[in-house]
Image 1 (cartoon, rainbow, N blue to C red):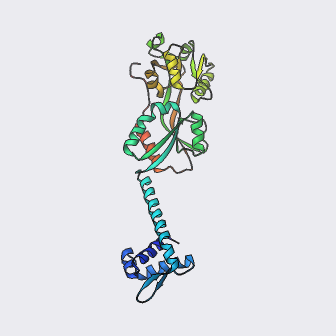
Image 2 (cartoon, helix red, strand yellow):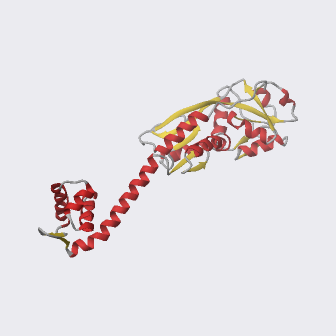
Image 3 (cartoon, one colour):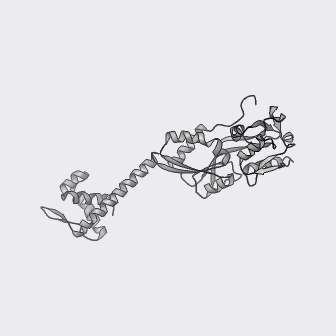
Length: 301
């Protein structure tokens, strides 16, 4: 049973005339007759009784009318919903992102996306970097915003920018007056860091250990906002990705360029290799590529 056959049947049932049904459907008589015959054969019995002067419905034909109307209505609604999704007039999108990206760079991008596609709803899962990777791998989300994974496997990573870690120091500290800081100097102070298994913590430890340095941890916490608040309160110093600079400054801390060694890593979009992205996901990926710029300190800092 096909949609074309149901439409043909309803046209005849409504007009009780093959001629009028042909005009309405823009079909020839043979084509309409073939559609009705195919429907009857697929269902196993006659739906219409046709004579030279009249057309009438059999009892089975009468019972099919309301069912056929409902099926056609549902089909038309489904077509319209899909059309709206393909044209971004309607839709839903799930994204996973590390908290540092979610609270600093993602909101401006989502604002642009919302202005362009106001009827597409976006769910943001702000979870640690490792969970973002797992959510993309499990296809719980279409897009993940992460530091470049060490091994992508079946996943595909598209860089947005290269992030460089910066020092975070209290505003009243003499370190805040420096134009730049080296790790040996920073590590002489009480260091505030994220708890494991944070990707930020792991990146710092791996890079420093490769140079014979050990990350000192006087204080550990789960959120970068807490790190910034603790530094601003004078409890110690820290190092964060440059995408967190605005957040640290809003919390009252000062960010200073950090080298010796320079620690950096690409940040980008993670997707499932063998999974075609929805139109909504492709649209957001395009907005991210347009709007995300390499964060950094203002000239002179």
